[in-house]
Image 1 (cartoon, rainbow, N blue to C red):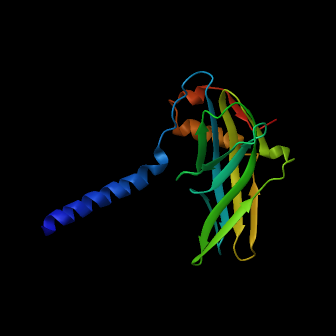
Image 2: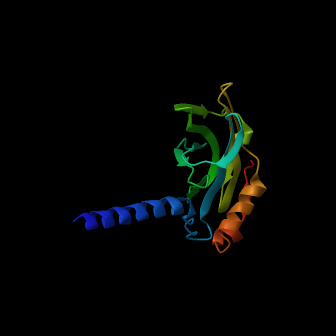
Image 3: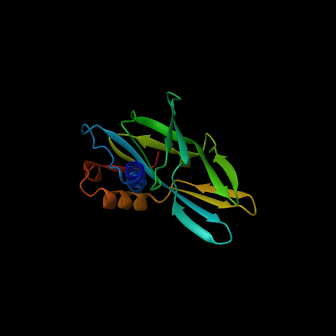
Length: 181
């Protein structure tokens, strides 16, 4: 009886750790047609906690809004810091909100940024192919209570990283449009 429970525990533990290991490795679904769309971007966190760290972060939420319809979609970064959404309707969108919960010294810090509606750098177009959001960077200095976010850059890095991770993907051969209006 004890042997069975140990084996069961070991099997569950192995499955759990395998799911953690491969959580960020899931492939992006291939396009259904030549008219398919993919929104792709990366989130990078840089923080000051006595030392500077730079890492791609999971769990950061990016809410985008279709400018014409006002429909909002919230995307959450995965274990590799990637945000992606396939088959959004074509149109002009804007980054409506960037938010995250971060832990530091046993406290949870919540932050968000809502770019001004007129901020042209927060706007991008979805059209057939890949809409490249680039790299969204978040800097947090916990001691000084400073949070800074940047977006609308890092397009070449995001595209290069995608093509390295997914060299056989049809998305790699389609048109990549950096965020621009």
